[in-house]
Length: 93
Image (cartoon, rainbow, N blue to C red):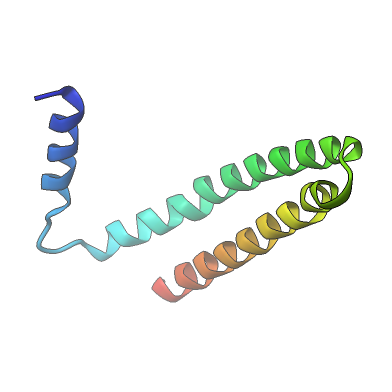
């Protein structure tokens, strides 16, 4: 078997747990809130900034898409995910 297949099989085997401790759940949610969300926000900001910069040379639908539609989709998506994670984290404590 390939290394990828071995790795995949080990991950699948490791996830077949009978019970996950509450502290583990809280640790995962805190890691997502404290490390994951800021990383995704920074990446999305860099991506949308580049899109908006490139939109200056676009016309028609491509300009509207790059300047407004995609950045708004990222903003709305991140806002929703961030709030869901914050609410979930507060309710776990």
